[in-house]
Amino acid sequence: MSPLPPASILAAWKLADRSCETVSGGHINLTFRVRDISGDLCLQRLNPIFDPKLHEDLQAITEHLHRKGLATPRLQPSAGGRLWEKDEQGGIWRVMNWMEGEILLAADGPDRCREAGRLLGTFHAALWDLDHPFRARRLGVHDTAAHLTKLEQALRQEQVAPDIQTLGQNILETACDLQLPNQLPERIVHGDPKISNLLFWPDGRAHCWVDLDTLAPMPLAIELGDALRSWCSPAGEESKAYFDASFFKAAMEGWLDSMGSLPTTEEKEAILPWCAGVAVELSARFCADAYHESYFGWDPTRYASAAEHNLLRARSQLTLAHSILAQKDRLQTILDKLGIA
Image (cartoon, one colour):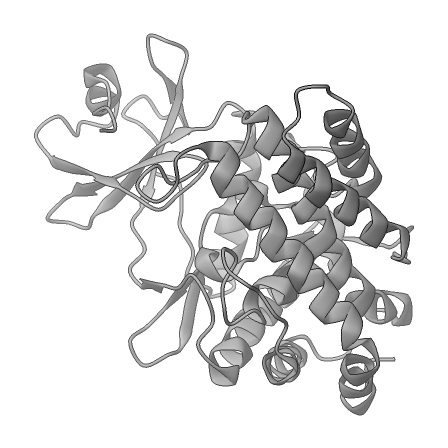
């Protein structure tokens, strides 16, 4: 059972008399929904992996998005006027307005992917003209070489389980075949545009991006690679994944409709390689954490351990990468017809 928010934190936002319920499903921050007549609120304890100064970046970017007319969570300062507050144990807490919408764990058709692409393109285009000096950046998030090195180090441990060892070697072999373009321009992007970080209205329209702690400058191709490997896997991220070319086509159509011709040629050419690249990278991260059990959250109602859950995720992402690589020519033809070459 998740703990209730500390009384000092509730008092900091004058929420002591409000109904507060734990929100399940997130793997990073501890989240509560606070019921309020004037509009529900999202109360969160920030994961220690994040620097609390990110809230200064979050405020600047969400205010920019709001001015551009996009629906977005926005920080609600405490009674003391602060963007975050610290509890007695040093935990960092913040409050945002609650965003309604349906959350999906996997896309259920091309139209859903087209909507996701449309809203991500709108999101990117809205941030294109923002010149913001970031206060907090999580460096190395998509340092693929570093993640592969961490996996190699884990596999060298004597006590590593045989199934982790076998899968890890397969991941490293697949990574050797990747040709990932680097030295790409950086753009302000979401940073974790998986399908479950997008809210939909009941009619299927994409409504709002959430979980914005990952906002950062990053190559656009890596952002899209991460989005597409999530959206275009109808089986989700925890089963025998495969990459659906029709989902891919629809997603890119939606994104291009919103973005137009803003990306450079080198960024366009890097999109497809990074679809496989992010899947392999994430597979390596899950596999390493199957040994370390120190980063990713896991579901104890369905799995006996964090290692079991992470091993399943790692297998799924590696299978997805193989599916992308096997369809490389077909997917490139789709991009060529859309004018991405």
